[in-house]
Length: 501
Image (cartoon, rainbow, N blue to C red):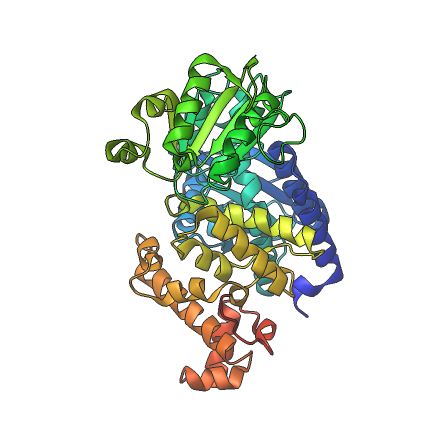
């Protein structure tokens, strides 16, 4: 019987997934992971180690782990670094023999190393099991793969919260996810502007989350108790945008049957977010410039001057400086808006964040669609990491919603992802091969072999004999490789490849 199918394990993993699904302080989440491993899954001890200044520091521990003297510790560190380098779980069946530790008389002690190499700092879980046979260690590794998938996000958030030099408000952004170097730079930049009333311009490709960053600025400012009002300048017709921004009086134009407040008035005391500011006409740019300079305006059809106290945050996916040179954007308005520029990195430059974001969206859409999904398989995670994401975070969000709808197991599998992602994995010109650079040849070849086997099983709808023939393998060789890579071939049965819609 597959250990992952045992009622006790399913119950423990489901409870942990449910616990982590409810966003809370990452310190509590890490404690929950360690508690689940020790009490509900029966490991005798669990340790969380973080590499700091080229030394491994013990940061959390549950249960009684063995003592490692200097010689034994150096051998253990060698195993940890090998696990980090390959990003794979590593097992030591009997640490007393392997590390020359004096036995405690209670039986053999196995150790599993679970790496979190995508986190801001190299981080590992050391998990200990008493009197474990080889088969038990192999089963534990499958369980720990699921645990790793579930807790990656929590580990990264916990490390980010511990990072020194950032104000408390941005150690744990409430609306932003990411622990990559690019996002840490962004958080530090935000820390200098959240407490001021300075005008902010957010630039970046479409789908990078510019509105979320604007909202994060508002939530961390002293205007948080006031309104956050957003306007998409590209979505409003030229004929009504002035009325939308400044409001109108009754009879100002056909259909104006009453007085109406504009977005500037509604945002008084709070923050006004003007998205796609580069889409405004030159005429509207003149009127907006006056409001920014004087903080006053008149409603359309009105004569009363209205004063407002509004913080303005703008966003654009266009090159406004080039537009000023072309004469399509006013230079004086550009300088008024470009007081504190923030450039949002595209998702392809946030490689460490891709799986974190995917987990976040998977949890969200699993809840929306009433599904019990505890994580993302390693094969699916590899495909996600190796895609170039031209549509950025928005594309990833849509991808994960599609995957959740197609998922009938407890984890997201490769075949539920769009065909474009699976194609990029096998394209030698894709970023996938570049991302594997730095790994040993053996590891790279194994990854390629694993993906080829998965793709072939998918093409054959889970028919192992047919897949073996296509790969020119015997059925026995095919079975050995499937077990080696822990491929759940049954999940591919009756699967028909679907094309992107």
